[in-house]
Amino acid sequence: MRERLPLWLQDSCAVRPRAVAAVGVVLICAVGFAGQQYWSARPRAVTVPAVVAPGALPAAATAPVAAPAQGAGAGAGGVGGTAARIVVDVTGKVRDPGVRRLPAGSRVEDALAAAGGVRPGADTTGLNRARVLVDGEQVVVGAPAQPPPAGMAGGMGPASGAGFGLGPGSGPLSLGSATVAQLDGLPGVGPVLAQHIVDFRTARGGFRSVEDLRQVDGIGERRFADLRPLVRP
Image (cartoon, rainbow, N blue to C red):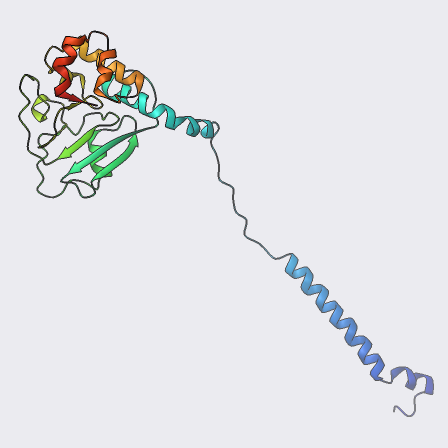
């Protein structure tokens, strides 16, 4: 049949190597272009940016400065204010004792939870778990109560109602963590003067030394001499 066709038609239908190569190049280019389009149009994972609340960065920048003074005022002196964090020392019969940083307004129960909880068999009857913590105080779990030093009617142990649970070797009363009730138990210190001491601590961010007591309104040289061996910063 092919031989019966005209010569010009036989020549057009002939398969030549050059024609096969040209068709092959076209096919390769088409396949490459289709693959590039498919690769560029494939779905990709998109990372969603984190949402930052308005005003969050300024608050975080100012929190470390305001936390010590305002945290102490809110817990011990009852002075208004919002502090970001307070620092307390949890020791005794807890699973993970040490210094803990908690939100202002936290209670003793929150400090115990931050320290891993109370160990089995520990006596916590002297602790008031609902008491609000103050910045810089120490919470001791499971230590027996110590008798108050001579001349201190109120005492520093759990019997005073403050719930610190201070144990043996606690020494003088800490001016940086004592409550108004504890300060009221010191010789020559009444409720008014105790509140003045707490207000001074709140305004200054704590006591750097016992000598700072001289600057509290109502404490003269004679009263300071009586209080000096009974307190610590």
